[in-house]
Image (spheres, rainbow, N blue to C red):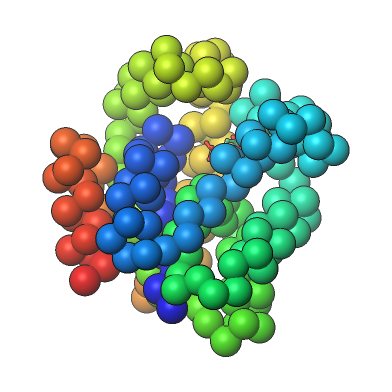
Length: 188
Ligand code: AMP
């Protein structure tokens, strides 16, 4: 299996690039943010809970997020591999993912980390707000909070994969096609 963690701060381009990677490598795209948003739309219990954290730019608690992610993986027993987009966001999530995948006789192949500086992220998210319909893109304070949470809680997850020799940084600036090509090169 080819299991990729596509990592990076909010606005780095994880969603856009995931769509390209799943096509080329025939993978299942699991975006925890997208799954939460689908639950919010469907007014499920999970959606209501997630919304209270997402609206503030905070992380949804690990226990809830991990359980949801595992049940999504289990929906695809025939998968050739997965792209994890927006997960793991904490060391506890990374640990849980390793244990869970080991139980299925597989593991993370690589973490690809899209690197984009903060000023560019703020510009991209403000622009995305015009079309995304995401309340968490529309409020500069929430955007800042998401960037702060990323720096404090999520950025250290890179070290988790560095220790396993699986970390690979990718320049996230430039055209969408150029960045896709860098990701292909990193995988192949
Ligand atoms: P995203 O679509 O990846 O930008 O995620 C949007 C929001 O969903 C985040 O700001 C968090 O509130 C929540 N979220 C998504 N993935 C996770 C995760 N792995 N752990 C905790 N919260 C998450």
